[in-house]
Length: 355
Image (cartoon, rainbow, N blue to C red; front, side, top):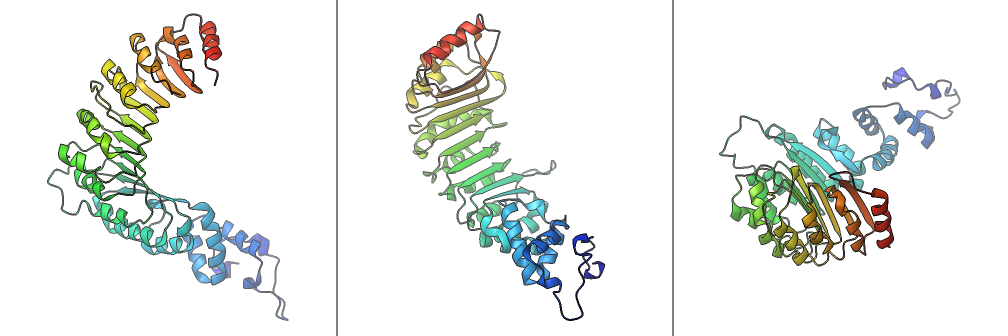
């Protein structure tokens, strides 16, 4: 087997000798034997090289890759030719890609994204992780938005995550009219308020929005101005928001709301009133590192259609009051203090929450 150049101990073939009368040769093996051969190649690059050697290997390799690479990361392979060959074989199965990207990655990232657009018709989710040199200062180079233009070339992209994107990339979001889910992890403080509003102009299809304001917490006060732009928004996550902002906005279709604070904090009463007033269809509420005071519980109880509540800082004395939520189906609580008579409160809660 060493003569084949694979460098692998194919012991299962060691005893197979071709007869002098023209018996079966290496390319006459059955499908399971070819699978066994590929199983000895641990490196993906080696599998691709073997797949290039003969159409039979190519067919077998395509079957293997289609079951493994529904999700891909640009760092999986080190050369564009390898990526092109892999995507030719299994690109139709790829539905998610993850791309760490810095200025030094542009010569590789850009051709990679073009390959995705050419060979991955079913790719729906992209996660772009921007990496910035600590010495970099404005002004930014003029082509910073080019990666967004390449993402527009992904024909079925409906789910986009941008981590630590700069203003030049964020502003290009106004061209993404087919998005159904958008996750923005860190909002660039250099992005103007007008640009922040404009980048959501054409997102009427959006159903899920996750905003991590990061260092730009005060921008969360602009949230009410976004409500009209998202008539179909079903889920909203707000992370690292300013706990002092008092109005959520008229998100009429909203059914799920998640609030995440970096440190344990309290949201003001006006915000809870706004949630009750503006979201008549809200069914799920998750509060992470958001402390609920006893005098605020009645605001949450006023969300009459609530079916799921998750809170990690709930007032212990108010557990039993949750029995007033007649539609509650799922409950996850961590109390601030130890509840008094916990068994009694739990039994009262179970008795009243019949769903």
